[in-house]
Image (cartoon, rainbow, N blue to C red; front, top):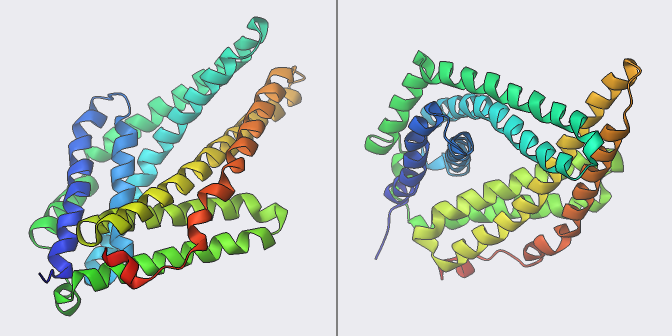
Length: 294
């Protein structure tokens, strides 16, 4: 039975729209993990709209993606502080009792950042800009700005073409990684992570059309994204700790605890990268259209 790309894509987007809009009350109530849930839903939706943008008219979808980037940015400030607070709390408990005081300062500082960022999110959710975005997201389901010709095309062909493009983009970046200068490697790995996330989300959206092969591709992309996400979290924690250590040295204070915490996070970053080659193995195979049709 023939399936048109437009309706199939709108159906795939419905779950992401529901996740985003249903997370709002929890964020307002500051329930555990609510900011993370809304941020993921926002970024997932923006990523899918980017990968499948040719199925829509450019201007309205471009405007929605811009507004989703704005919302994800606000949520990201809060979420990043939340993650660092959790990491620093765990690291602090590993330190000798007499050295935990400084670690707890790091935790308190990140929790204070989270509180400020969460208040900024609430102000945004009460504002006209978010209200307009919410309305446009609702219309995306009821009256999507579909490109007539592409929306009527065979869904399997359109979805497979998108996955092929995202797959090849990620594979090219991974293959280039060994040649990247060491000074640029951290950022290149971060870009690989973002490309893996994009492939994961575009594959998730295609599962209803391409079935098992798309599900497998999404699962593999998620593993790679997770490995490099752990690496990135550790790298960012190191940077934050080193900033605090530099400030302490300026004051003439001891930095032994900061140095120990920094070493722990650097070790965590190296450990995460040990899993990188295995996580990227699925990119050694070729992407074939017929493979994705099940």
